[in-house]
Length: 104
Length: 104
DNA sequence: TGACAGTATCAGCACATGCTGATGTCAGTC
DNA sequence: GACTGACATCAGCATGTGCTGATACTGTCA
Image (cartoon, rainbow over all chains, first blue to last red; front, side, top):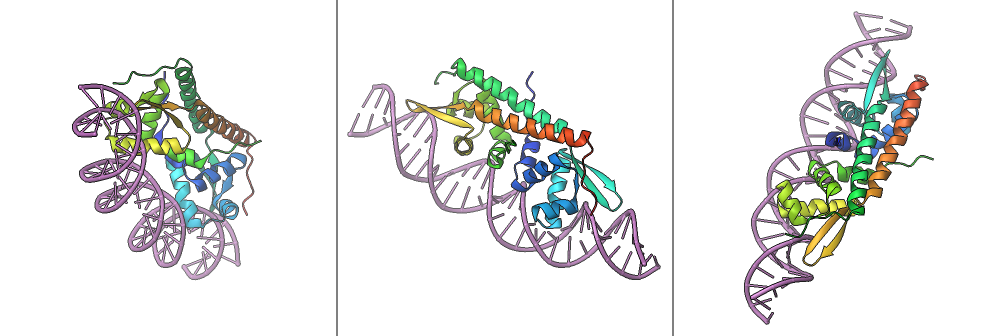
C-alpha cells in the first residue's frame, strides 16, 4: 500500500535553518546552547525552530539539569525516506510504461 | 560522503496541494486539465503550483499540441529518499552510541 | 483568418511564517 | 532566599506564500 508523505513534516524540514539543525543533530545530540554556537542564530529564534521540529515529531527532548538535550528520531526520517522511495518507484514505472492519460 | 537535502526541494514538496499533484503524477502522466479535474483546484492556482514544482526540478513538461503533459522526475525523489536514509542512519548510530556533546 | 480551448503570467489581497526584543519560568548556585 | 544561566513564550513587525480574477499567449480547428 501507499504510505503517503506527511505535509507538515515536509514543511518542518523545508527551512534552511531547521535542516541545518537536523543535520547537526544527526551527528551528535546537542542542547540549545550548542546549537546557538554552531548556527550563530539567536536563542529565541532557535527555540522557535526547535519547537516546530518537536511538534512535527522530528526531534525529542531530554532535560538534563537546566539544559535540554535535543535528539533526532531516526524512524521519522526513515519513514520519509521510504515514502519518497515508494513515490520514486511508482514514477519510474509510470515513466517506463509511458502511462499517460489521454488528452480530454 | 554526506549528500545534503535540498531545502528548496523540500519547500516545494511541503505544500498539501503540491504533494497531492506529485502523488497523482507518480501514478500517471497528466496534463493540467486532468489535474484540475482531480484536485478541484482552479486552473490558475494549479499552474502556479506546477511552476514551483517545475522550478524545483520535480516535474518536467512535454508539450502535446495545445496540452502540456506533466511528468515526474524519479531521480529527484530517489535523491531525497537517499538523503533522508543517510540522515536516518547517522541519527540511529548517534543514538545507539549515545553520542552527545557535554554540557558547556 | 477568426474563434476557441489549454496554459501561463500578472497584480492584488489575505494569511502564514520567520526574526527579534522583552519577558516568564525553572533549575542550580551562592 | 536572591541571583544567574538555560530555555520557553509572547507580541510585533517584515517578508513570503497561496489563492484569485484578469489577461496574454499559443496551438487547433472551422
